[in-house]
Amino acid sequence: MHILIVEDDVGLGPAMMAALKAEGCSSVWVRRLADVPPPADLAVECVLLDLSLPDGDGLALLRRWRARGELTPVIVVTARGALDERLIGLDSGADDFIVKPFAMPELMSRLRAVTRRSARRASDLWQIGGLQVAPRAHRAWLDGVELDLSPREFQLLLELAREPGRPVSKGELGLRLAPLGEPLDGATIEVHLSNLRRKIGAARIRTLRGVGYLLEEA
Image (tube, rainbow, N blue to C red; front, side, top):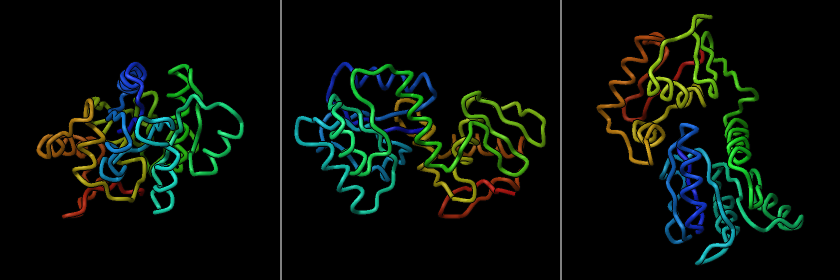
């Protein structure tokens, strides 16, 4: 997963990036509202959004996103812990709310739950036809036989399996598979796709020219 962190704390921002990296996620960290790009431009699966930022209120940003139809999941990360603050955040479109200080394992658990709901996955074992994918265990099976996948191949399968039947562009895959938010180049992605096709069957990953790649559900 590729995550956008909007957090002005110079200690917490890098700590969140490190925790995400340990979970196999890439991330980009910004400290000001003015530096926040549209989530769709970053191909992020979730935004971790502080509310008290140097140049404004994160809640106003969240409301603007929701008003224009931006559906990227958002977890509000803030020191504002009062009940009315939490309710305002959730009613403004936040998918979850975590109050500082917090334990990193709790944040990672909430992140997994929010992105699982966003991908309409109710469990930690995803079933796509004869494919089964266990994201947290980093394991996958085809017709009951465990697949021998490299870390990159597994991550690629995972990103395609989040929304089977929906095409994902090469640029989006490059960002999602990127270490520290630096995109992988197209040629590298093609190599991993070729290897993955060989292991799960070429017909399971369809190429839509000029659009991207999709994982067939059947």
